[in-house]
Length: 270
Image (tube, rainbow, N blue to C red):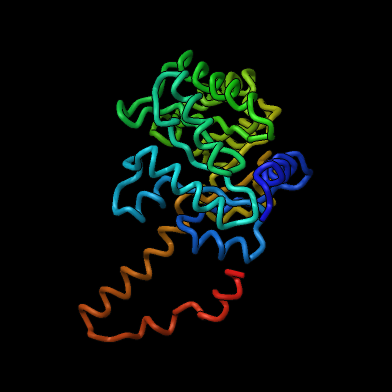
């Protein structure tokens, strides 16, 4: 089993290499082990995917449930795991910093912090948003391994179409020491290139917003890391919907022709 320190070093190095890298988002141990077995170099949790496994909507998972989930994925994989840590499960900077240290203790290699309050359903004021990231950065600096902190600007994802504000927030997060920057909701290569041209730190792109676009296209526009959010989870749920409807409406089991080969999955589990 690789130590957390080694995983963190590998993860940090991935962000400094010349090539872009993919970081798909499993939602449980099984999906994490399958993706690792396929050859991905790092993985990231998905808040909506975890919430699905608990029968809830995105944003309804508790801090304790998130920490347990991260511990499970880290303990059952040998590659770096990045946590979607939502808003840090707190509004004030001090508690965000405290919670970041908690999630770092689960064995993962990095986490992301949003500038959006799930309780108030609004963006944090600019100054507070920056203070929250700075507090998290200072907390991470006390660790003896290179834990990667990603700062997320959420306005585009939350329906606030203000690219200038996105860039302003990302630049401020970068200035206070965030390792990686992320603005989910960018959906054009032109906008992506505009954002990344204003930044120096590695940038994460949420791929499902770029249909018909390749990883090479995203890299050319400035992406360093490409994640998929909850997309794989929801793609996996769709066959359940189809199979359930077929059984109820037709009484047939034709869906079984699309089952994953059990032997292949076992091999991927290692």
